[in-house]
Image 1 (cartoon, helix red, strand yellow):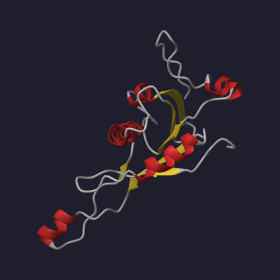
Image 2 (cartoon, helix red, strand yellow; image 1 turned 180 degrees about the vertical axis):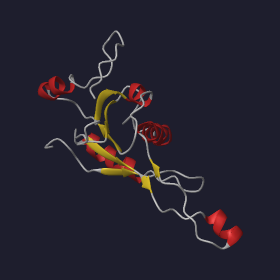
Image 3 (cartoon, helix red, strand yellow; image 1 turned 135 degrees about the horizontal axis):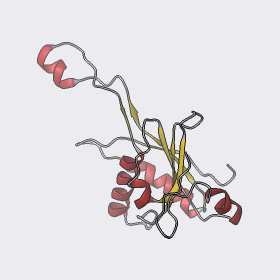
Image 4 (cartoon, one colour; image 1 turned 30 degrees about the vertical axis):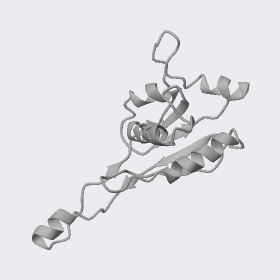
Length: 156
């Protein structure tokens, strides 16, 4: 934990709201060579404004939990707009799902590979890695998803 910078929350985008302020914190962490823990958005008890306008009754939309794939898509979109050279498809990340549960999943891989994996049920988080010390590399090799031959080695 000593090599982690500020934790960020990645919010869901919608048609009118596409904040990138979380990317500023990732940039600060990257400049200091610190890993970034990204907490992914959850939407529960969100009002259904269309239903409210139609019927006047308050109803709620089904809960949504951001996936690692959605988070990576938003990170890569931020990089396309900001052009800071912080994240790209080859950036090493760690996908985390249901930590502490019997079916937890931890996978380390480039963002392009993480993006293609199904991490299953929520809750998900993502770590954007800074440079890695040899001990960190050794530890992460346990969770690395793709060997040079692209053989899946993920740990569940």
